[in-house]
Amino acid sequence: MLAEFSIAPFDKGESLSAYVAQIIDLIDKSGLDYKLCPMGTTVEGDTDEVFELIKKCHLKMREMSRRVITHISIDDREGATNRIKGKPKSIEEKLGRKVKK
Image (cartoon, rainbow, N blue to C red; front, top):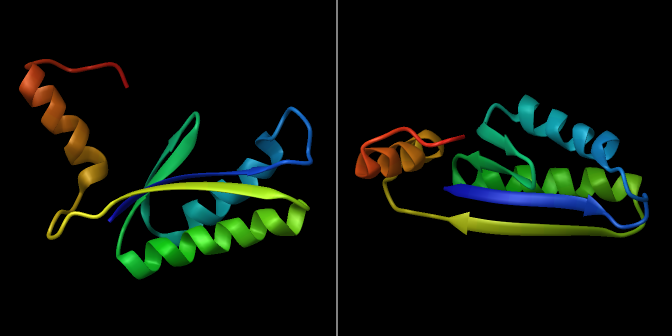
């Protein structure tokens, strides 16, 4: 399963990187494959592991904020693995060239 998610506190002003960094620390320590992007993070793993990680991250942010918004997008394809790297590679193969990352 791939899940892209973002978690944001709504009572911490304009700069959120100090709060997001604490969430990324949890993701990094989870052992799941992930890709950090400017507007969210994609993780890949077993369904239960992915959902448990997202829940843990949401609750961690909730400890730091009175109001938290979490957005989740899931791509759950039976039998598919290594999609964090495989999906972009498939596009590059179809284009016949590397794309900006």
